[in-house]
Length: 418
Ligand code: ATP
Ligand code: MG
Image (cartoon, rainbow, N blue to C red; front, side):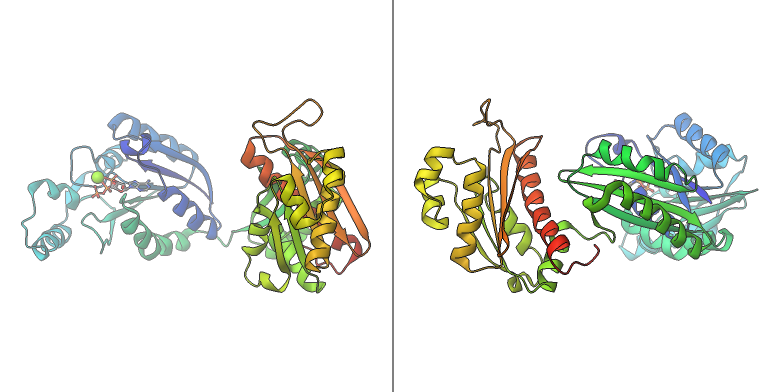
């Protein structure tokens, strides 16, 4: 089944307030196997609101709206939808009494304006609202289902669970949404997409989205079906295709992050790690230690920003820095080897680069980072040039360092498929 969400409220069209109800509703509807195909945000305007509901009714069987059920002149949802469906609004004494009782419980009299909250379109079912004054409304109109819910999230959320969910479930089929997520590093968004397109284009029933963030690309697969076995089989086929297209660039198949994947590899291999970081300023150490239990594999690290500290803390020869420059493959290697020796860890990581925005040159531009990984079997080094601002360069550098560790275990150790 397909659904649309209509978020009502002029404040949602200003920078002050964000429509978060639709995020909640989308997640809940997806769990029921209902696909949200469109979200509309509309101000408190009778004509625009009417148009929004009319158009949605032409497209989908289920509409869930939030907001505009309050007592004031600008709360128009109830009246507009009743009018659109050609249903009269009738006063409902039970609701009116409940609203009056609620006011009395605060020691106040109900203002006359609240009477409109007790009006119910003919044939509609009021939805109980223990957290607020206005009830929601459930309207079945031929093949259509419409749920009008109040705007405040603390009222909308329990009302959805208690009142809307059972009604929708009664009418929904057994279709559920199945989701699979793969994460890729070391390739840009468009390159990932161009490589996997020939695979996912063949599966019309699967919705594929490619999302990029600094240092990684996520590929989400969504499929709506009654058949769990079919979803599993389809995802396995697609994943196999992706594997051929992306080889070892896929690091996660279960939503785990790169630090998590690396942490589990270190643990499984009984390995320890230490880092000597320059341009990342400790970001690698921060990301590795943000995982619970990191003390078993992360022994320590230094942020050696100045040349003197590179020498003092990671034993990088002064002459080497003078000869090759602080940002060089040779210094990255010396950092990795130096910290590994000092700490006595299985692995040592060295990172040195130019995060920018200043400090770049023709020969060594902003974004250039040298990374090295030292182990018992020797040292690996790579240079990369990362795009973006300072934060992005630093994040991508830490990501690349983590990926070097991952590759090390992928080809030299016990590795779990991410
Ligand atoms: P009330 O009786 O409180 O007026 P209402 O159904 O008329 O309820 P609105 O007036 O539209 O709801 O919104 C009330 C408050 O709920 C807003 O000020 C806002 O804080 C919150 N709200 C409304 N819509 C949303 C939304 N889509 N996402 C998150 N919060 C919302
Ligand atoms: Mg209101």
